[in-house]
Length: 401
Image (tube, rainbow, N blue to C red):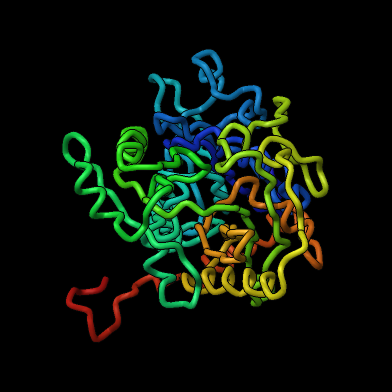
């Protein structure tokens, strides 16, 4: 049990998303990295079917996904909405005498990726419950998980962006070849086809003609109602960096350049290469694994002016949504021409991008980063509180008791 001075932190992981498994890995890494001198962390697992569970076995990666036997050792819960300022997980009834004690917490730390968690849905739930939560606010989360909406937002901010077209899933069948040709007339071939609302390279493919676009759409439409089509970037190099607010000042992390053997980074290579079944990082300076075992260059040599541009563009995107948390901003670059474009903003990056902060100047360890984000969550919640009766005197139409 937490002492009177400890803040209970519920680490939410999993979720009803194609990125469920990645979320589990990120959540377990965060769970083990939270400063246990200041906080009392525990996992809250959301299954692919949307059921919520708590229980000690959820702290170990080997117990995922829980089978029926393990589920019997866990407690299925739901979030109470009438406890402002504090999270209360209420166990579901499991028989006449099966009611268990409620589980309370002070701050939610969502480690979700993709649909149903990173995209504003859980953030809106936490707002409705009026409890502190880590990371991007509801609007920013929803907007940044929509790649088309992100481009529309950033278009006027002097941030370079690739042209794009959006294909919406029709009620039946696929868009005709003629309709697609008209839609992508300003994009050309080859092109990249990807889901509008997913991440982690899921569903991304390269097309050399309209028929290849049509062949890629069914897989995307199984997971997302919209697909985005962009020009293929030759001589592709990626640059990624994270952004957060420290002491009121927006600060950017180290820059990474992933090394890639193919044009597109395969999902399993990205997240599972080198995985040994353990739960990931524990505290600052831990050996990375899973996603982090992918070979990358940290703070690589860059063309004159590019580093300053990457940092300026990333910070501008963060400030455009009144940023909170520590999102990662990803860029594409044509190495031959030097042309660079902002690709996407990840509200909750894998492993919270802690390795980018450990390599920053000055460095910020994973534990320190999470402490910063938890403190920010508490401060943001405190700043957003309304009076007990928020209706101004001049707008009151009903009798007050």
